[in-house]
Image 1 (cartoon, one colour):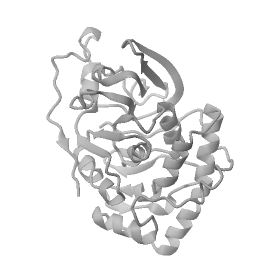
Image 2 (tube, one colour):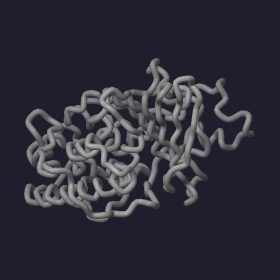
Image 3 (cartoon, one colour):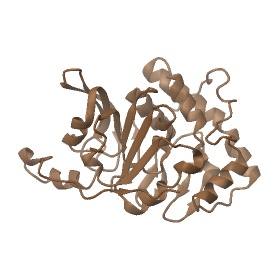
Length: 308
């Protein structure tokens, strides 16, 4: 399974104040805005049961301001400035909607926007990563309104939802079939019509996107860089990928960039912990170095995720 329990070892849950007017803004994932009734409608459209009451919903939403302040402080601490588009995206995407255990078919929205952010299990070996780490990786990718983005490891769908609020087009691949089927249904009820998902092995990327990707975000630990992902990175593009041995704490984010001449550059970033990438990655890791990522190996037929 490409799934992960994410932790950035160098991020502190610092406090702070959000940009003027940001926390008070009303997210609008649907034309009618977001509130308790739209939360229930979106859950129903995805056939996801919930027992969240209106009173509980109001309490959860009341914690958003603190979470957004933490996100802004973390980004300022690591990048000097917090990207306003990243802050806006985290403000717009209703995180409580993604607190859902797909295997148990049980919502746990009451814990959303927790003061000390942490990963949350969502079934099928997957996790909703902590929001500090997700914000950091989002800004590290440098998304823009003109970007075409690829995510390897859809998980809860939260990370690609955030990216979709910034970029022109967002693609995401999930290797775990039952999870991919369920999460593929969540975007339409939210009005996120620039997201496309599929079930498949993210090692191979999304070769049908002939022009490639401006940014690629991998959310599972690789033992080496999948050659197809580098090939699909546009000149001027940027890939963020955790690398290290499976279930070891000595994992780090790496940033790969491709210059206009097609030359690839890399640098080591913060320490992280992710569950390993599987599929071809694990199979290739057992091969001699010269055989890794062999071009003769073809991906299994991908499946579109379920939609509504």
